Image 1 (cartoon, rainbow, N blue to C red):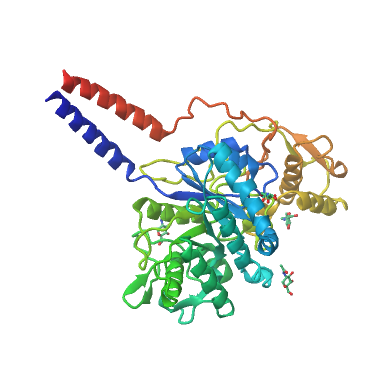
Image 2: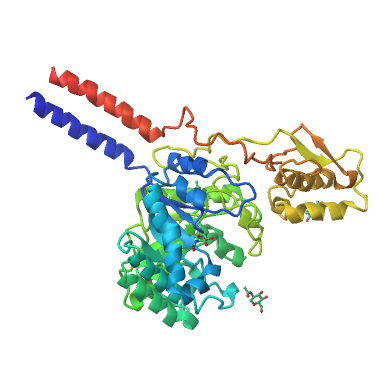
Length: 495
Ligand SMILES: *[C@@H]1O[C@H](CO)[C@@H](O)[C@H](O)[C@H]1NC(C)=O
Ligand SMILES: *[C@@H]1O[C@H](CO)[C@@H](O)[C@H](O)[C@H]1NC(C)=O
Ligand SMILES: *[C@@H]1O[C@H](CO)[C@@H](O)[C@H](O)[C@H]1NC(C)=O
Ligand SMILES: *[C@@H]1O[C@H](CO)[C@@H](O)[C@H](O)[C@H]1NC(C)=O
């Protein structure tokens, strides 16, 4: 009798804890980029990933510190090969073998890093590359696949190619009219067949923000998920399907393209999707929260698109801001993070079951001091424009741009912002707040409503791996409390 009751309690415990986890995101990934002047230590980032419920991460290259820190973390890893390495991989299997050995096998065997995918290239068929990678991507993919098999990793690690959504289009303007771009359709089909033959997925990056950015007439609500409010977004009617957001429509355009060419059951991963918070009129915290919360709600509910009801794996772009990213596509490029450069939360999201985003822990900062325009300096000083231009060449001034978070500063504060970004980027070094006598160091925070005057993180002085008292996640805490409850209950039933 006692034993049976104990089993019942255990079963109830499993059911109880399972259902209480069901409204928490599963299969949530993010992109961890490294084009930053001041990287957060990898072990702090890995802790942050875990505390925020990410169980997948995508790296743009095989960064040693990141891959080591991800060892035995229970986080699945997609590791990228940059486009400029594709030609080498394409021309020699040995190059691919060496890469796999140094950048995949070694981390799996020495550190227990759970590498699941190798991303061969990054959006190599973007039109802006003028076809530079058209010839090399497929042979590189084949050689990397051969190298993985040779390393005995053929089953465990899959190849893929993260592609921009412009590799397909729709002749009718509707998702059902989807097909691959005419100039690359043969290449696309060869790649897809190869991936399919090797049990590997296709990876696609989809950006509703860029649809809006590219077309001023784009209906803004269609960029976001419908949330049941009275002002429902416009719908695109495609046969029996009504699309209320461009992400679904775009994804299903790809699914139609795959179906049309005989690959209707090809697995697809969303390699990048997100919304920036600065650097453009539509890039702000309000829109980013609206988009990413809508996306999170989808992830939590496990809902896919009309044509693919099962949800694909999704990698949010991005975890943290990257202040050294190229701004050729636009100033917003440096502001895609859910978190600022220092791992602080930009805006809150419900990550499922009421769980909120948690900031990185153990981050150390430089002294609380800022570089500003000196009180006695004059705005008409002839060396001022040159000084500001110099500061903004080496530091990130994108928040000063038109309709960005610091665009409403007055002229003096504007100069101060530029000087401070330079000073912080240079680690507050002696002489980095001089600008021809036009600047001065202050300990009074010059930040204004909506515009942060940063202090840079102290990259040489973090807490390192030392576990902080709050290191155990809320999930861990819940588990322990639940277990204690069961033990007490079991003892009661037993006696
Ligand atoms: C491993 O990856 C890194 C980062 O992309 C690269 O610099 C290095 O050359 C790679 N190693 C080999 C042996 O290819
Ligand atoms: C592509 O071509 C354009 C126009 O000819 C040029 O401005 C650009 O630099 C080229 N880009 C690359 C990556 O070659
Ligand atoms: C809900 O949608 C409306 C318009 O469709 C939008 O203005 C509002 O911000 C959305 N709310 C959330 C929480 O996404
Ligand atoms: C502020 O500085 C930026 C970068 O130098 C410049 O583009 C902008 O015009 C300035 N705005 C004002 C109001 O001075």
